[in-house]
Amino acid sequence: MTKLLPFLNALAPLTLFVAALLGPRGTARDFARASIGATAVAFAVVVIAAVASALVGAARTPLLGAHGIGLSLQVDALSAILCLLVGFIGLVVVSYSRNYLDGDPGHVRFTRWLLLTLASVLTLLISGNLVVLLAAWIATSLSLGKLLRFYGTRPAAVRASRKKFVASRLGDGFLVIAALLLYLQFGTLELPDLAAQARASVSVGSPAITLAALLIVGTAMLKSAQMPLHGWLIEVMETPTPVSALLHAGIINAGGFLVLRLSDILLLATPALDLLAVIGGFTALFGSLVMLTQTSVKVQLAYSTVAQMGFMLLQCGLGAFSAALLHIVAHSLYKAHAFLSSGSIIDLARASWTAGPGGQPHAARLIIALASVVGLTLLIGWGLGITLRTNPAQIALGSVLLMGLVHLMANAIDERPNAFVVARGAVTAAGVALVYFALQAVAAWLAAGSVPVARPVDGIAPLLIAGLVVLCFAAVTLFQNQMMRRADAPFWVAAYVHLRNGLYMNTLANRLVLRLWPRASTSFTSNP
Image (cartoon, rainbow, N blue to C red; front, side):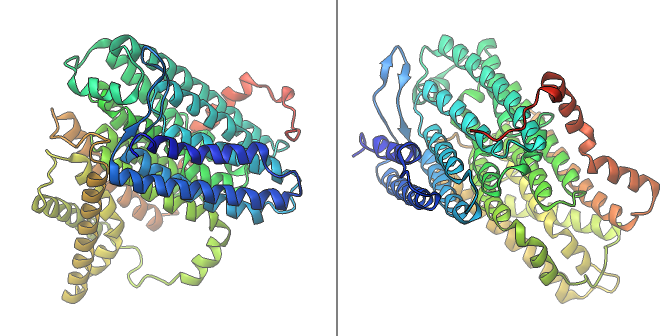
């Protein structure tokens, strides 16, 4: 059974691939029905394989090749969890697109590329050799590019796909060079063997490994839309909504998966982890600030994705790999629902809006509330044996999570505080913190053996980064409060305008793309 497990998992992408290429030649409705059926079969296969993986553990196929280079598959907790996630989201998106594109002349073409994209992602997740991973990585990018440019008559869609093309090809080049360096260092491209050798290696700080790790980090940041090449993700709203849901809830996580899969190698290169933490943290801060100023629901969700991917890579940079896996799962489920329901979000907001009894809390009350939630996170973490020294990422991200309750806590600490209201706010915050740490423990248990366990930090850099993250997001909370209270002041008006335009980073990227592909050479025609 163990030897057959990877082959069982391979049936899922194979089913989608066959359905995409050999689907019925009837009407678009017939093809859509067949596609839903194929996706349902693929999801069922993934569920069975995940259950089998939980029972028998990790498994891999023999290498079809020589000298550590060739074709092989592997299934472990990491691939099983993410295959379940992608399979479920894929089934929802394919079902949704059946009605969404009903009557569109490109319905069949769209569905074919959607199935091929899902097949590529599932292949990426079960790859056992860097050759297979690289092939699936490029196939995912190319098939997604077809979906991004589905409406080829829209200039914004063409521009976004071209920016994505530049970022993807740069990332592909990084990954190819990293694979070459790893092969020269370890003599194999088999992923389980690379992980085993990295754990046993004494080559910490080796120039070749450090360079390979930096290239892997660069590839992940390009794939997950980190600064400064994040603009393409903001402009893909010209594509159909199902593509946005699949991209933001699934494909964008490929960068995080790459880091998790090669995390044992990254642990040999401290500069790579530090770079990952700094860029991830800065991107999370940037995305969170810009998101506050957006009026378009989908653009706001896109900046939210940029910020969330920054959080996820920050966790990886701080060594909390199981926490990053949990973040991927939680964000994907939330973001898929958010995009697929974005058309009705205004009605939902109007139906649920009520005026806050305390208005915008005073900055002094906010500071007290911020200090309270950070202290509460530290206290509960300490009670569970988690400190800044043992796991700075969990403490930092837990504090940022509880900052979402700051306005509730600030309104509880009013000019005439009520003991019951204050106690209720404190109990709510404590309950959220306990659930957060419990979920982190479950994620660590599920991912045990497939990603490294968080270890006590070595050096002061991770502690400084974690502390800086908490301080910066506390400042963002205060900034949001003051921007609402002083909306007419010149400084806040200027800040709003600059942030509304994303500090003009995307504008600079657009100019670069137009220089590479002048507008005159653009042919806005539908894809054949």
